[in-house]
Length: 83
Image (cartoon, rainbow, N blue to C red; front, side, top):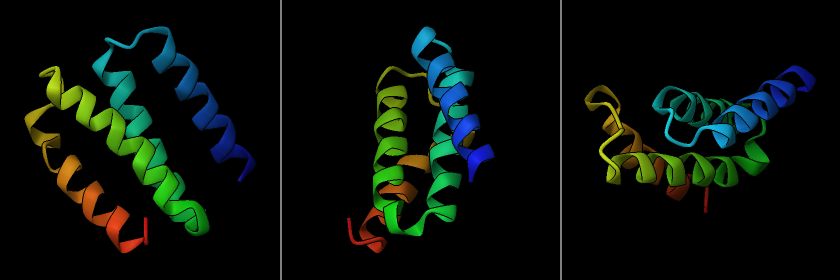
């Protein structure tokens, strides 16, 4: 868990440093998504954080077409997690 947290903190700092960097934003989405699997009691919270970024990227035209499924899938995962 410590390594997951440290990795997430690094990605959060990078993403905050350059909000326009689509790669760093995507990395943060994936980190939150993975964190939800190792912290199931907080899964909805992590999925919501990932979804917020994905929606922002989609609306700005920065979400790659290969990642277009992120929004719909994260919305479903939030519902499934009770959030």
